[in-house]
Amino acid sequence: MSALYTDPIHHAPTDPTLVQAPDGSWRMLYTQRRAGDRGPGVRWVHGTDIGVARSDDGGVTWTYAGVLDGVDPHEGRNTLWAPEVLWAEGRYHMFVSYIRGVPEQWAGHARTILHHVSDDLVAWEYLGEVPLSSNRVIDACVYPLPGGGYRMWFKDEAHDSTTWCADSPDLVGWGESRLTVGHPSHEGPNVFELGGCFWMITDEWRGLGVHRSTDLHTWERQGLILEQPGARTWDAGLGHHADVVVGTDSRGSELAWIFYFTHRSEHGAGASQPDSARPDVPIEHVTDVQVATLRVVGERLVCDRDAPIDLDLRRATSPTRT
Image (tube, rainbow, N blue to C red; front, side):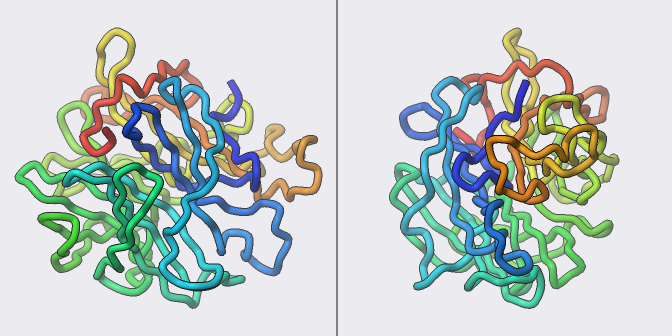
């Protein structure tokens, strides 16, 4: 099996999030890095649009559907990263990381999270910046609380790149931010419910950290998944910044699908071989979106990235995704 999705324009999709559209099809929204940009430093990861792919067969195949228009509230070329999209309060809500301009280095500039709403995933209305713990925040994840309201988890780079959170009754007004998951440093928190408890996946840049909770307040770290090379084409790299959709397999058993991105240049074993279709694109910039299955065994989250995947998002049950 080859990669699930590769951006055909700029060849570097990252930070995927999945959501079901009003017509029943699915959308994958992602950071559209530009692998072929040979500008100075890391300009190629900035000035990015939010790319969109569409699937009409339950997520098995994806077709490029352009980029989101009208979601940058400022003039000029700026940076949009890591969209989080959910259906709630009768509308689609998107929380997207934002940087002014096109920096050539990672550090040294403010990062905020912006809030947009839409009825169709096409036309978006900008509601403003989310007030959070610092001006170095990215990677929003939002999940409904059992007692009502919502919680947003996010990476705060001003606090050693740890996960913080804030609560809201309506996704508009937000309470005080607080630390949720500390060291080791990480990014890209993603929260879901599977097997009778809650799970948080974080990107530790050496695999994905797994955290378990029974109440969405206290988290117990369990170790890593997707830290070992996979056998599929372009899946030899570490798993990075993932989204999870919960559903059932064809026999009705609960599982989840984890959508993550990999760097083609990581781990060797043929992964660093140039793509003959893109000879002018630096291999160290090229990324792909992959998918694997998650299951709960006992009290542990298990992921075998090489196992056959019974993927059909028409069996999805995640509350924030449909």
